[in-house]
Image (cartoon, rainbow, N blue to C red):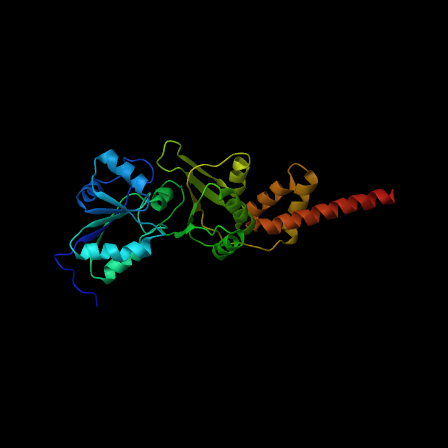
Length: 296
């Protein structure tokens, strides 16, 4: 059993801070940041800018994924001696795809009072503006940076009947969307970029449409993706679907990739499978055309 906290011990406050707009902070959070002895900050410079904006003079100490196991025991000792500490990250709520879980766990094991100061969160902000029903959802955080591991994770959640919330960095977003199109099909997504900031952008469309929009542009700013819950998927390509693909291919109104995306979206079949079928049918039609020429 955990010991009862001593009155002489301080409190660890887990404080949510703005994800962009500095005005998105609670009155209670400001009060806590002003009264604590130490602010344990993921990014000292970023937290210092926030503190300067609101006239907060509490001491700021570095606390991040690289030094957390080294400094956490020291912070526990300070808490036991009666000091109070506020844990903050660069943006949003600590411990949600950010450092802090190790420190909070140590404090709880030591019987120290841990108090959350709720506020901004990119997860809930994104869901609220996604236009997707989210009574329940799955939060995946950042996907793996390596393509193989990222694809494996996407396959794991393919067909999920709940919305998926994913964080992504701007330099990886195109690769992630390509993998998503290949594995999950041309699903609907909401792309939320630079939430609460001056250049905030929110778009809801299919993955292929987002890729087309981004293909010649440099993406900037942190991104949240909300992937619409999957419907029941029929992965088989029956004769009716092959006939439909054949009409689209022979009509030559759309490139093969767009035909594959269209069929994938309409029939709930993975993009890779429909693209392969389109190529096979195109080759068959071309072969039939060559055979007809040889006969004449």
